[in-house]
Amino acid sequence: MIREKIRLISPQEGELRLMEFGQILTLNDHFNQHCLHGIPVQVFKQGIHVGIGYVSAFDKYFVEIEGVLYGRKHCTFLSRSGY
Image (cartoon, rainbow, N blue to C red; front, side):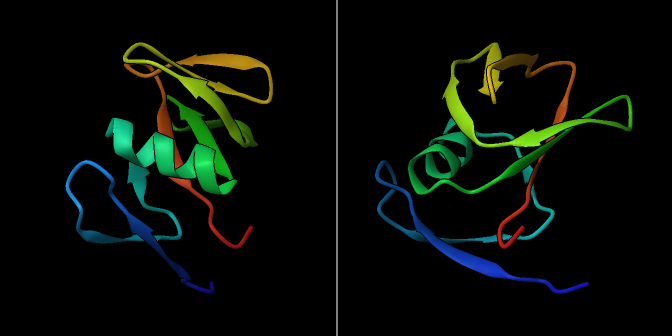
């Protein structure tokens, strides 16, 4: 497996962050950077793959990926940079 890193700058904290392929997205900043930079996200629910695509919107409860809303409390979101 190729492990790629993408340099992302957090506008709120002003510091450089590295998002690795397969890293779990948990913070609003993670979803914002994936949305802004068109980085794919893979979605799992109870360990089962349920979707992959691009974040188009999010709030503290849901993430919209390819027109589907996923609950942030019920799903795990993985960065798929380079996918």
